[in-house]
Image (cartoon, rainbow, N blue to C red; front, side, top):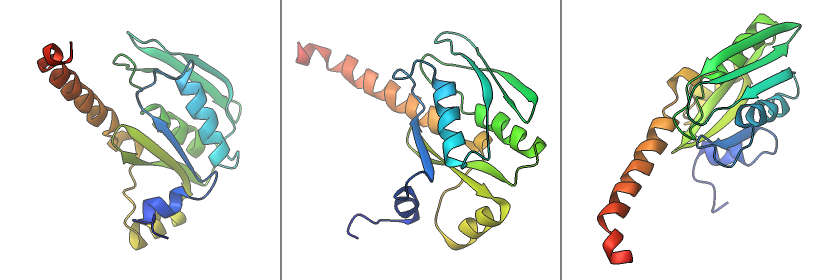
Length: 166
């Protein structure tokens, strides 16, 4: 109980309810595919992506595609070095809507980390009305900007103090 600070702590403690990932992707080989499969899992496989294509490109745009409900969904995603473009979750939500699923993915943010939860419209309304959960739709995400700003500040501070470290 002493670890419970807010509603986000509570909801994050349930297994397979929230999928967390770092928007800085240097630890992923196929970051969009890995996150997409994690989202499928937390949806109870209501979202069933097939034939995922993740042409992640560190220096340029990345092609991302999958099939769902017999339809192909594809997009070009902007990358800034090793930072993911979380707008790919909007494409997944579009697929959910077009295949008649009742839920969609919403985001929580903690710095450069993003937690994603799968909710029906009723669940979303209840959580928004009755909790302090900072739910966002993917297009509202600021995680990449926050993370990059932190990284830039750290590099700047390190550069200022490099002589002291050597």
